[in-house]
Image (cartoon, rainbow, N blue to C red; front, top):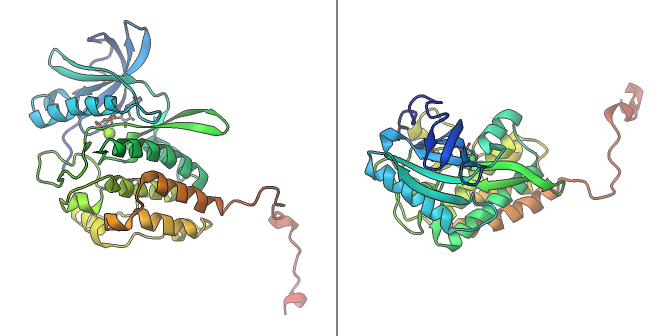
Length: 316
Ligand SMILES: Nc1ncnc2c1ncn2[C@@H]1O[C@H](COP(=O)(O)OP(=O)(O)O)[C@@H](O)[C@H]1O
Ligand SMILES: [Mg+2]
């Protein structure tokens, strides 16, 4: 359950180095098992994101297999909201994946910077992640690690599409209905904030565990924190399995009450009680959120200073 030490040794150590056909420029991110660099593809003279398995994990077969598996899974699904993989390989003992560089930031950084987002924005971001997840599920693959750090938010194409979102990090992806849990080495190397109850109890998982995790991400996008916050890991695991999640409208007044029901269904303890697909969930979220917005053409309420002054003799 504990994360391995920071991978990759000293940061910046590889800057200026050539790895296969790529020139490493700067570090852009790191997660539980890899470091991601901005690099230049020397053949095509374009930027790429170069993901390297941490050298100290490169001796561990579980991590090597997981890393090799990741590139194959991501490359197998051609989807506008999944980061395209260009190449994967091994050179001088380093395992690497070269993929599209997504300029922007991950949702973790975005939320840390801006705080909770409006419900329409949350629904737009989650909707794009949902379409990527449903595509993975159609290939009978379950992502199993949906969290803000694995959601990349780039600038969109126009004002109708203010952001373009990518799902990344298919390192924990498994075939649907495979068994999970804490038994295999290094299964959980990151946060437990988004993990579904059936992942914890080691039951077979299918796409509905990603619905749960996406529900946790949406909860955080709307309120600033994931549904459960506990002092220690055991309490957090217990909460995912047995505690009812708090209602988002109680944490963020002004959210339409319909959003509570939509999230409660995503965060149901039993997969059978959840939305059947991620897009079903985010579609319902968008419609529930739209109930908050004034109808088009509606006259906005007057500002406070323009409200009639009620004198005491009127109210007494
Ligand atoms: N294609 C990319 N373009 C830009 N940044 C990326 C890209 N892929 C990953 N990152 C950044 O690197 C971080 C770690 O990458 P990730 O694939 O999640 O590694 P890990 O498997 O170690 O969690 C991400 O959280 C993100 O901030
Ligand atoms: Mg990650």
